[in-house]
Image (tube, rainbow, N blue to C red; front, side, top):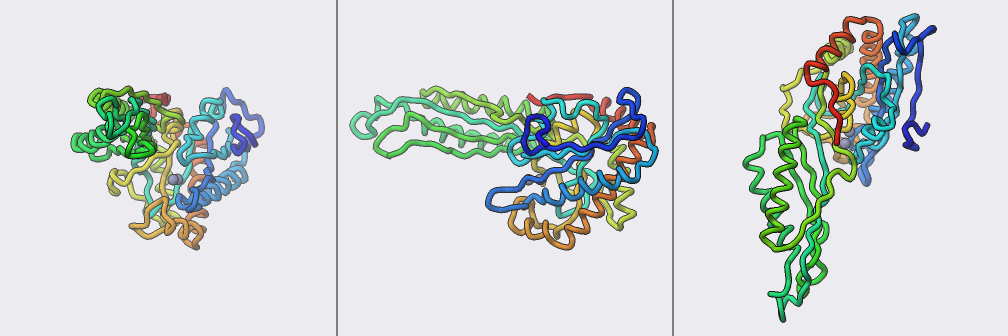
Length: 348
Ligand SMILES: [Zn+2]
Ligand SMILES: [Zn+2]
């Protein structure tokens, strides 16, 4: 417990006799377990935890003399806090050659788009004034926030369809009779590729600067209060193995692109997938149309379907882990694919 300085992170490992970290491979199976305030397991991380622990136990018991090491990493605070990036920075992924986890969903997918995400808090500061007796003495911070909000709305027409941008105004004055000298916005910026995420971030900066200029106020920006989530880079060499395991369990894991990219959310596994080859397949526990982060999904996360999915997923992850340890050519192919996709990329 307490891996990487996070109280609720944990690590367990199984080593083959004579394991040599310089020579022998290590695969990591990740388990999430955090939930959503007020909703519970609307993202089904209880299934991720069960599948991850099950996979670790199954793979450890079946490893026999296969040289190598299997690591179970319990990774807390996925929802909104980029917990895995904190673990990466603390060195918890050092020595790991491939990482894998599964996520419940309303489809069985070998590969799914997950957009990168950055967060931003923007604060406009103007000059307070009596809104009736001398409004001309004021510089209205709420005006700037309003202009920025409108600017984001107009910017959407020029964004790729899979980019996402959402903002709320969390502070905009106390009373109509006082011109607000402070307004605060919280903004999420999401995109399918690290480069487009960076492009979109630059345009957000420009909209905020422009809004401040128009209203005659100052703006300060605090990007990434928690580290950015990168998009998920799916490793096809490993994902094909996953699909084969699911087929044997009577599940057809669809390839990328069948489910539209516009259904994408964000996950801190993106950061892991840009550090080592990784897979983040989805397993069906709910009917199509039941979205993540809803109370309905939380109900499915404790259904019989969810239990079946946890078992199928545990077996699937265990098999992929054993394949990766037992077949040097598979890990080699996964590594080559990872390097061809740009190699290691670190979040800001
Ligand atoms: Zn979630
Ligand atoms: Zn989730």
